[in-house]
Image (cartoon, rainbow, N blue to C red; front, side, top):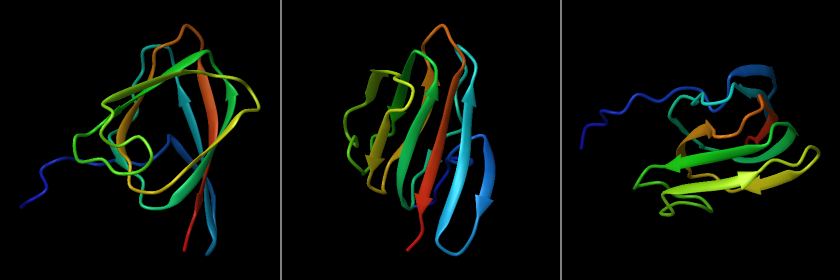
Length: 108
């Protein structure tokens, strides 16, 4: 099957990369959506600011939330979330505040 979806970066800005990790910044204004992206590495999300976010998962998404469709959650600055690779998603700021997090990908 030929892939017809266009995938973007997993976050909005690459901050640093070496042979072991890739560190991203994700900033989304209220109502803004990220690019559709695929998580090919395990990763940690570290919440910095915001109030409510959602992730819209593709039907063929893997990872911890694959197959759930939309997942919504409150943002708690300082909270961190571990996620296994495999997710195919679009992040959506469904809150009233700008969203900011750091995403750390662990390269194998």
